[in-house]
Image (cartoon, rainbow, N blue to C red; front, top):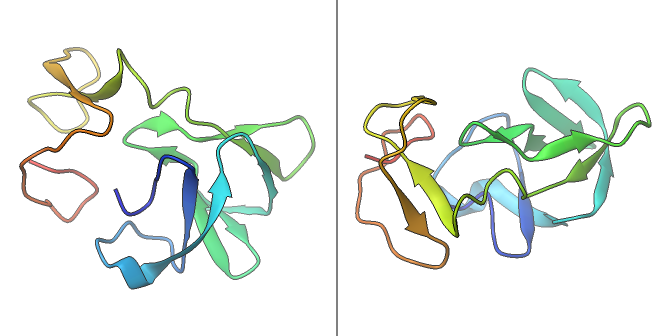
Length: 115
């Protein structure tokens, strides 16, 4: 994903997931804390944005201090990889797991999902 890396979560220039590398800059490292303003599912940090969730999993968790969140990847990892299903948004049935660092053949659906 252009938004996440093994080191952290990349800042987006806007409140949208895109497949254009030029739409992402800098990096909020996993385990670090970021402060900003919540806007429609995104955290605005100066002129850049981080999503509160990625693939339905929370990646920004409240620290207890208002407006400050921990950049957390624990919810993303399931059995050594990223969970996939037959239906977008399906929470009840797991079909398998794409291993971290592996390759997945698919097509970008343009809405944050790969088929």
